[in-house]
Picture 1 (spheres, rainbow, N blue to C red):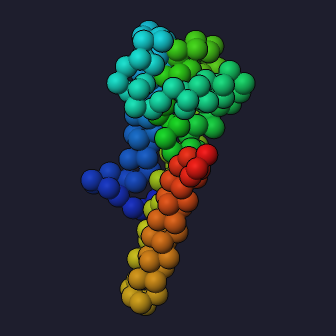
Picture 2: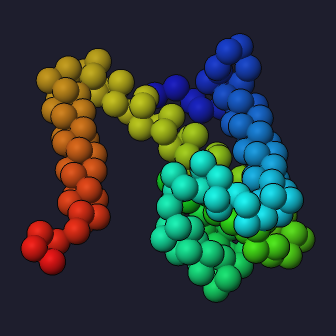
Amino acid sequence: MPDPMSASFLGMPFWVVVAIGAVALFGAFQVYYWVGRTVGNALYRSRLGRKIGQERILKVENMVRRWGAFAVYGCFWVPGLRHSLPWVAGVLRIDYRWYLVASAMGCLTWAPITAFGLYAMLWGWLKVATESPSIAVAVAAVALGAVAGFILWRRRRRQPEAGA
């Protein structure tokens, strides 16, 4: 497996690409917060708010009220919540100083861990594929099966009980 520090993407060292991604994500989080703070509750009635659903928004609101900046940091690690919680934090007007710190810490930890983790998984899988393509296909099939199983489990869990 190549050394992560020697890897490149679009002619730039991989760590520079990750740093740019972290800064871009931090900027997006600030925009989300200020849109939520500026637009306020009208955001809930918007097309995006209706798509997310009132029940989910209330869950996120309760999480932000209870955990504050910790919820902002934690949302980085939950797909889907990562891009909905920040604007709810803005609507609820949580203290921007704490929001700023939590979003900076989230960007500084989530972006490199995710990028280098995915990088390591991809190169590990490619190494297995060069040594034994059949094992690589089996690993990919198991991973895809696990993802499909998880998605089906989540969908069934959300469906209302039959006859209830």
